[in-house]
Length: 505
Image 1 (cartoon, rainbow, N blue to C red):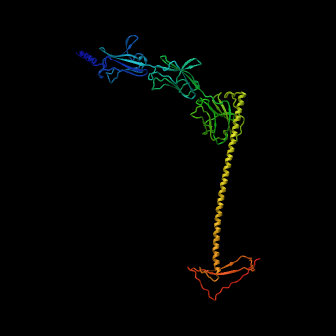
Image 2 (cartoon, helix red, strand yellow):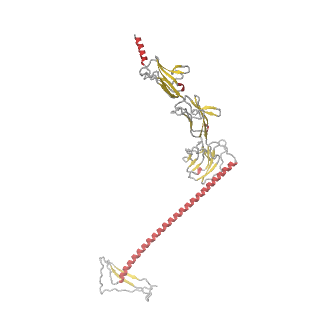
């Protein structure tokens, strides 16, 4: 009896799962590298069939092969259903490859199944079998393009290789190799079909033939030309004159202004030790006083020195390699220079070319540069002298005008003072003359009695009495009363006048 009940429960469980969209074909399209979910579930998600399988149709053998995570093709790439939904029988495949495309069947007992047709779009390179030419400069970054026509399709495997001209082989490019360590980057995560190769900090050795290849056989070739730094006017000596306290620019640049050399140095000739010392911001002599090139022009290697001192004078060298270097002689005011001779050390510098025409043209260029500097200095001195003379004359004229105005003001004040003094004297003389005109009149203003004398200083007369001088005396009484009082004089009082004769020699 118990066995019969158990069989009935099993049959009920099997019959209880009814597939959703049974015997219908579901069409799905996906891309390589992606994940895809092949749907299959019972109408009641809490009902799980006793047995179910996923199969794929084998076109070669015309059979249905069971899908299992133990098989090589699907190992670690498939997952069946979910634990919290027993009736969810879906199949998850990740990551997809082109071989995953085909017809799948979700099958349970008693002939219940559901078919799913999966189309997997793989990577097909754009512009295959074509060669693209790219030109860049040293120090820059370059992107070697390579991508799938389906940007979401990620190939199962692809490689970048570079042609080795010495061994006549294609070497795989890897960030682990010494040449490309920390300088290469492949594609982008958000675009699986972007297989481009980014190379940073280009060197001249990076130039050559590159190949983007897929496992399926598609390839794309790229020829990269890297232009390096070649100095303008190499192996020549230029003379520059400057003054202490000023700033000076020692020019040195590549013919390709965007080409940044892998390495370059500035050196100064040490006359005491007869050596070439590297100029560095760490050295005491040049600390916080020099600047190298500019960021927006990688090929500008010029050296700027500020606040020049007498010790800065001498011979400088812009050095790239044994073939690329130039010399600059810096002359400061008051510094005597000696004839410059480049280094002849074979271990550190290749000898300068001994072509007479080259030497003669270099000397002629140096002489012309010196003449130009002397002419410019003479003109500058002339203009400064004229300007100083004009300023001095203007100052003298202003001082003269100020002195003249001051003198005129003093004269005006002196004349006014004299005029006031003369007017006051005339008033006093007039008062006295009035008194003298009426000898019998007495003025009472104060309690003091003053005796005035009027003396005629003339010593010569046109009359017969030319040797006699007249003297007249007058008595004046001053009172503090408001009104003058005329005091009649007594008949007994009288005034006696004396006549004094003054003889003049």
